[in-house]
Each structure stands twice: as structure tokens, then as C-alpha cells.
Image (cartoon, rainbow over all chains, first blue to last red; front, top):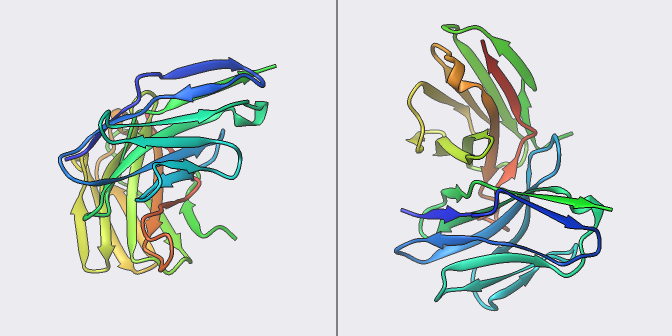
Length: 113
Length: 114
């Protein structure tokens, strides 16, 4: 079975500051890793994913995450956040042999002016 | 039009009532899922279906049932609703030829059980 831990339930940050949202996972088998974002009153959207290859993956809106197998982590970072990045961010893991997605509890990113 | 459509968007019901949440998709995906979202708990999988004849329980299936009426339709039923089933419910699909592992979510159904 897989599990995901997001220790920070809420991260407040000022606009243009850097941010890191932490994610650790547990699995006895190989996994795919994902970050999904949920804007207010909307469903979830895929932000970025790690399947294989380069351990650093990037989104089109400036976020990036690095897969660290030894630390079983997949932290999300952005060097300079915008007000529009205010949302809830979910880390998720999927067994490569079984298409069932397991989510973490989410981190609410609050960007203020 | 949305690719994954959930109806209703909001529902208020009373304890003991039977209620059905519906999900339809135009993406042609084989796989469909039902999740519930609770504050501080993230999303938890209720049921999932990999094709019309395949139904599987997720981590919190007690008190729920599902029906996969067609490839495009996957409904979730609460046989006798109780207050702790108050939550935001999401339907999702996956399984296209590209991005096979990516889930596409509906806009959610907010259910309140009084």
C-alpha cells in the first residue's frame, strides 16, 4: 500500500517570496508521483508529475518538484509566488502497476500582498 | 461543455434518505473514480471502476454503493445517508491513450446530510 504525508496544512507567504510545500511518501514498490492543485470552488487539476527520467519536473506556471528516492520525498517549490497561486495543493502517489491514486491531506497556500 | 460532469452541484438531504450522485464523462475513458474530500483529510477513494464490468472498493466504501451504467456513467449512492457523510464528492476519470495516469476531475458535489 502507498501513503502520502503532507505535514504542513497551511503555508502563508507574501507575494514574490519563494515557497516550498513538502511531501513525503511511503511505498514498497515503484511509484509515480503527482501534484494536483485545487483553486477555490473548483475540482482538482494536475500541476506536474514524475513518472521516470529526470528527477526534476516543472509546470508551465513556474512550479517545480524534485523526486528524491532516498528521502522518499517530492517537494514542490516556486521561486516567486503570485496572488493567483493561492490554492490547495495535493501531493499524490500511484503504484506503477495499479492505477489507483492516493492523496495526501493537502496544503493550503495563502499568498498575501 | 465540461468533460466530466457531476450532478447535482449541491444537495441537502436528511438522515436516513437515499441519495444518488451522478457522474458522466465525454472523454472516452475506461476508468472512473469516486472520491470524497473532507477538510484536513484530503481526498479519500470510495469506489473505482476500470471498465463497465469492473467495480472495486476503495478505502472508505462502507455506507456507499456504485453503479457503472455505461462506459460514460458512474453513479454513487448513499443507501441511508448519515451526517458524517456530509462532504464534497468528486468524480474522476483516467485512461486516455496519452497521459494514461492523469486523473480528470469533475467540479464536485457538495452534500449536506442533516
